[in-house]
Amino acid sequence: MPTSNYPTTLDDTSTQVTPGAATELDANGFQHNQVHGAASSALIALQTKVGISATPAASAAANTILTHTGSGTTAWVAPAAPPAGISILEVQVFS
Image (cartoon, rainbow, N blue to C red; front, side, top):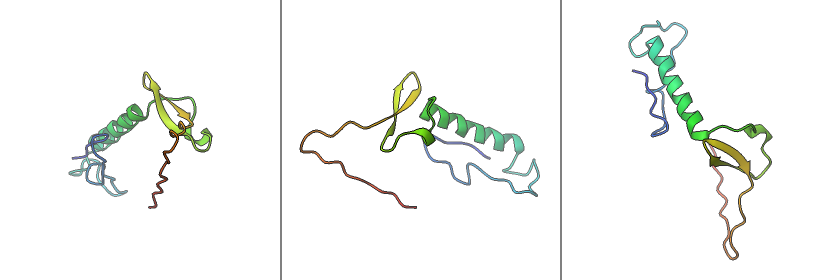
């Protein structure tokens, strides 16, 4: 049965199933209302975790991070400089 476990764990193709063009709306494991319910639950959880802001990521300045500002809102801000003698490790993730 389709479900969403986000944000506790990441969803995968077993929790967020993707019916094909020929999949019947009531096929076992692909029930139409459950597929939509799982997607809606994941979407709401993502929105709750990220919060709201009038500034989308596309308009964020370079070298800024998304921060929580309170009351479920978010903002793009430049990170504070590290204390003297402390360096920041840069991590790059390649997929």
